[in-house]
Image (cartoon, rainbow, N blue to C red; front, side, top):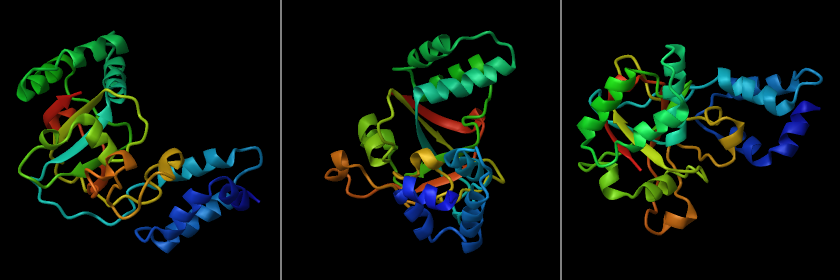
Length: 233
């Protein structure tokens, strides 16, 4: 039975789906029905991810001030991939190595100069392919002033993703609504590590220094033109 197969292979993920109070029961039931109907010969994991990809942003909307700045920490190689996809679609003839080197050259520049340099080079492009994960930092200081890149990665519980990283700060465009993440948003690969409730749980390496996590949201991918500050690891 596909459901039994999935639960046996992914006991932690299955339990997180069961316990996620931000998922409506109808959505949870739809997932298990989808798994039950997995066609013969189709890997159950692939079938699950196909469902997750079509059922994101189902959590409650997060009420934020339109002027509030959100933040996103992402490995540079993922940011390079976003630029490369944009550049390839426009036949700019740029390699990923070239783009990565151009990002690393931003180190030491003022934030405004960094933003303009990238905008001049690549225009405005979607920062992510599908949805975006962002975190809130409701302090007067910028998160980079209070954390090293490694501490921020650890506090956000991003797992063993290789650096270096880039930290983006932005406001959401009109009509872009942030949501509390649900168990459907991380995808099967990251679901076992994800924590329900809309807040990260710092990894053990930094839990003593940062006992509290950071509030996280998911929303539609934004364009680079929304970025107001960035920092390169």
